[in-house]
Image 1 (cartoon, one colour):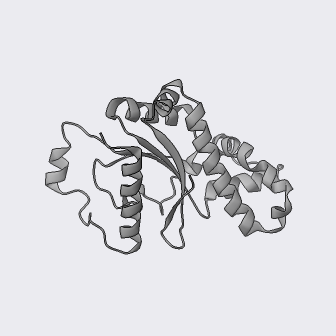
Image 2 (cartoon, rainbow, N blue to C red; image 1 turned 90 degrees about the vertical axis):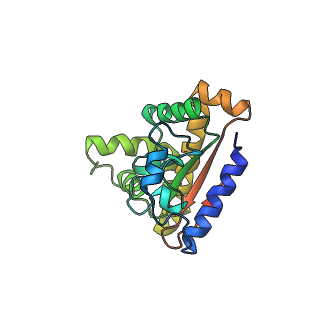
Length: 203
């Protein structure tokens, strides 16, 4: 069984290939590869990422069909359905690594900051379901000196939200806690830079 350390090394190498335009997966969906996955899959990592169209996990980590179990939601938030999806991958496929992948200039983070600064103009009910999950991890930042530097505020807020999601995954599921304590599962955070294409692993 592949270890979380080996998986992390594979993801880092894949991101380096992506940044260097040296992809090993120029054809992500060849017939041969598709046929090999018809009867099952064994993804080696779970990626909980943002829905942003500029951050497709398979591409930024230079992986192909069947390699990653990807969950995407605006703001890479953690809700029961995401936790259940992670539990499924870990229990069914023995996936040893979960990566919460946020990114610079995240629109969901900006929407949450806007809601905090302008409580009289709240977003829609459905968007608020996302904002309300991000809010606890970043609302104290709005009260610091960062409020005078919007760019820095967003940068710190993105990372704070990633770390909060990592903590929620680690602590919100007895199933996942069991695998973490046994050493069979690692949950870490990462930030993708829209500007450089580089993924910075936070843990």
